[in-house]
Image (cartoon, rainbow, N blue to C red; front, side, top):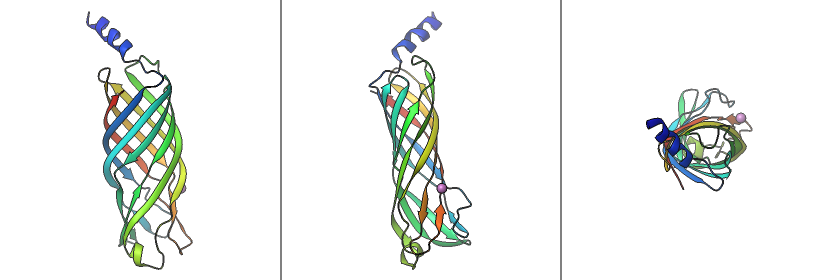
Length: 189
Ligand code: NI
């Protein structure tokens, strides 16, 4: 009887075209260590992440990733140069290979990231190098949704985002190219 109930409820949990999933959780941005600008290091940060997914078909979704602003310390040769904040909205097309009735839904995605740096402080702001330029780049992502019931789900997602910026006047590219990891819960409308 138990297994019948499980299969019965999984029918209800089917992914359908027009579904909207909203997820919230903890999100961590870890820039790659060896950025190209001398010994510039951009430190990692953790914030609140938010994603919204619209299912175009039962197996294809469009996802928007947003978060509260990340604040990163920037170090050059071990000295703290200053801080910058950024917003990393990323739009991805996703593919869900499993049967739409499965409670476990892994997915892969590819998309476009727009990163806006602002509120720069310390030498980042005051130096001749000036502020960081905005970045537009590609992203790839993967994740797993697990349906807790027909409305709530648990999720882990990972993005690799190509974020390249320039310190104005320095004529050098800083490759931030972070790994972004989010773990959270979602609600399906
Ligand atoms: Ni890059």
